[in-house]
Length: 91
Image (cartoon, rainbow, N blue to C red; front, side):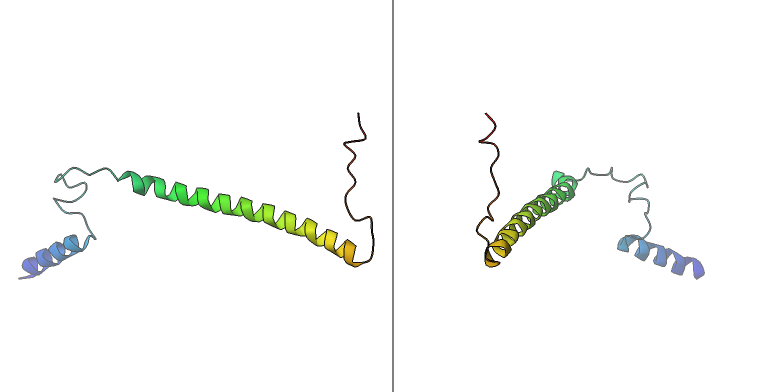
């Protein structure tokens, strides 16, 4: 009697994917199938999107900071707030 219950529990566990059985991975049954390309490249694509969004966010913050400084200067009543272009003087 205990042998039959143990065998039944092993069968249920194999069906749920907990322990590989004779037909599962490493058991000598079907050969393992390779993963589809989408599963391999999905995390890399997600990482690229995150890096791209972080870069765009960084550029946006830099431009908003510069505009904020210019606006603060103008609101304080100054008239010489624009950055001076020294490139045209060096010829």
